[in-house]
Amino acid sequence: MRLFNLSPLNQRRFARFRANRRGWWSLHLFMVLFVLSLGAELIANDKPLAVGYQGELYFPVFKRYPETAFGGEFPIEADYRSPYVQELITEAGDGWMLWPPIPYHYDTINYDLQVPAPAPPSADNWLGTDDQARDVMSRVIYGFRISVLFALTLTIFSSIIGVIAGAVQGFYGGRIDLFGQRFIEVWSGLPVLYLLIILASFVQPNFWWLLGIMLLFSWMALVDVVRAEFLRGRNLEYVRAARALGASNQVIMFRHILPNAMVATLTFFPFILTGGVITLTSLDFLGFGLPPGAPSLGELIAQGKSNLQAPWLGITAFVVLSLMLSLLVFIGEALRDAFDPRK
Image (cartoon, rainbow, N blue to C red; front, side, top):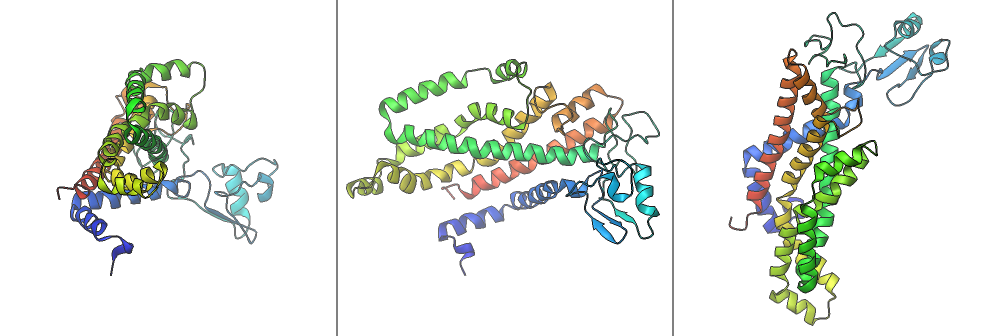
């Protein structure tokens, strides 16, 4: 039975990828962590997953309920960590609340600490708190999700732009290739960090603003690879045959040459993803990344640097980043070996 209707060549590539045990299990572990982080609101939240009150079910994670819905006085969203709201719910005969495993959101401040913040790990805060009394475990989960989603979005869009630019340069060659290469040389020489610092003084950085700025420079990673594949492939026999049969340039580029060129570019995706994670972490560490208060691994590193008396902050950031980047590198190495034409 053919595996997922793959061609025999792709089946052999999949078999080589699976034979690399380190890359295969790294992919499984990374996907498990990523899927869990997508449901961060169900794992770490300062709102109950479900509330039972007077015979009715409420789901605060998915919908906001005013305090008056539980017999309170104010028509504002209920603060479920407040003893007053908890008493209102539990005093109703069959009232109950089902909390997530970590009863803290990434911006929830723990006012019940027994020691000054940053507090060490405890049964209440598994990885301790930062210097603003926020739960580190919760911020790690949300920060992991933001880092991966940012890097993944950046990788997809930059790859699309880079593949198109490299395909046009390599297929047409001549002046288009010449001017394209000169433009890339000038554009890649611009100081990205300095531009971000200058622009940060005019605009408040956010997820999409950073994504747009980084996209202006990250698309060049795949241009050279795709350009070389198109320069080599445009003179092959099957391309000449397609041109002789009247196929348009667009059909030849994206139907005949591009599938072969993508074999080389696919192996770069995990490494581009790794670069996106490192870029966002570096900007957050320097203070030019996500807005203040946003869950960020780079901000956690900065807190570890500023609070040497709280080693759990630096150790947590180091372990999370090391694990994430190592898994991506192992996946990239396995993918590179699987698509290696010499094998």
